[in-house]
Image 1 (cartoon, rainbow, N blue to C red):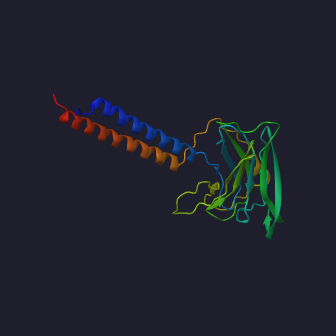
Image 2: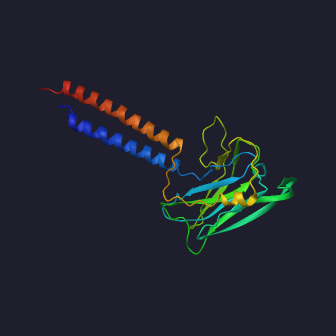
Length: 244
C-alpha cells in the first residue's frame, strides 16, 4: 500500500489550521463590540464628561435607540446631555431616598434614565458606531460606577448590556458599561463649566479592543504556530516512511 504524499498531507493540515484560526478570530471580534463608557475627567466627588461608545453588532439592522440607566448608587445632582444631530434625548427622573446638596441647593430627585432615539429612519448603520455624551456630577465616592444599558435595533430586537461584572470572575456575555473613577478631592466646578466639558467631537474610527478579544487572537496565533510545528514534524516522518 502506498504512503500518503507529504505535500497532500501538508495541504490538508494547513487547511484545518487555517479553518480553526478563522473561527478563533471570528470569536474574538464580537468580544470587542460591547457598549462601553469612559471619561477623561471623572473623579469621585467631582464633575466630568461620560462618553458611551455604541458599536452596531447587527449585519442587517441599524441601532435606533439607546437607554442608559443611572442606578441610585450612581446618582448625580446634575446631569445633562450633549446634543447629537439626528438623535433626540429624553431624561426621566426618580426620587432619591435621601436628599443631597449640590451647590448649596437641596436635591430630592435625580436623572435615573437617559434615552436617545434616532430621528426619521436614521441610527447607527451596520458596520458603524456612535458616541453619546453626558456631563454631570458630583460623582459618588466610589471606585467604579455601573450603567446598565439597552440597545434597540430597527427590527425590534434588543441587546441588554445589563449583567454585572464581578472581580475575579469571567466577564459576562452582556456586561453593563462600567466607569472607573479617579481618586481626588471633590471638584468645585460650577454646573456651567462642567457642562462645557461635553463639547468634544465624535470620533470617526473605533480603535477600541478589549482584552477578551486580544486574548482569543493570541491563543489562535499560538495554536497556529503549534500546528505548523506539527506539520513540519509530520512531513519529516512521512519522508522517512516513503520508499525512494
